[in-house]
Length: 342
Image 1 (cartoon, rainbow, N blue to C red):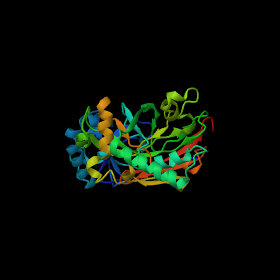
Image 2: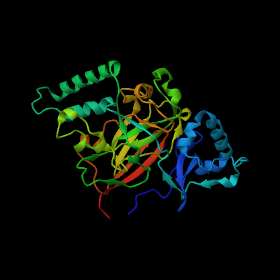
Image 3: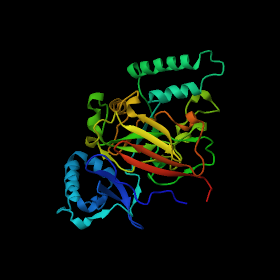
């Protein structure tokens, strides 16, 4: 039984957002979405039959004013460039992941309360400290880390991305699949060795990512010195539901103060502000760019707040429904299906 909404919602901040959509039995197209619930196929509007959302970001500074003008015209039914008939209702269209990035940079251990909770959950049985003393000590370490240390960033695979309303298949080998709702940064122009003060000028917009993780395979059991195994624990097909929309950076007043909320079968599990991040967006983008060149359309995931399944002692299973939302960016809904289940 499907749990997908009858129609995706055009609820987001600002005059427009970007998405990738398709009509039944037709190829996906890059769409300009307005809050009135209508979509413009940007291939025809911008005269580029091969256009994708990623190619939009390759021309971001040039095309952004044009997108604003198209959205303003579409909102008033006076579009003379593309024609009113080029706009179509959002209802009835399938919403795909809004962009196909070449690279995904993922931040770990970046929410203060989340890290404290994880550290407490993994305390040694013979730890002599009281929970209160341990929490205070860990909090002090986190504050010192935010002031003096570097972000923790690793690489994800684009093949793990799926749409914001698509079912997520839980692999048979995943013993402890968990949710991690995150704010995702979309890169708008190449960034290499940029400073934190200039990093935000390379950000085109923001979207929602649910960075699923199999907790049982995070750490290698055969050789602990190897450390974390992010390939196996995070990159199964469909383990990164993305979207629904990319909202331009100019429409988000303060990305450091957005509410990240995930509900599991209607029950709130994560509900935290991005203000709890140890390393903000500018520091994350700058840090990743010191080693790699960030490309237009790439994603920088900013980490997950407190309230994961390990905290609640409740991991994902067949039939679970996750509803994720972030202030101003809309909402996604995904259903979990065990591999091999009908």
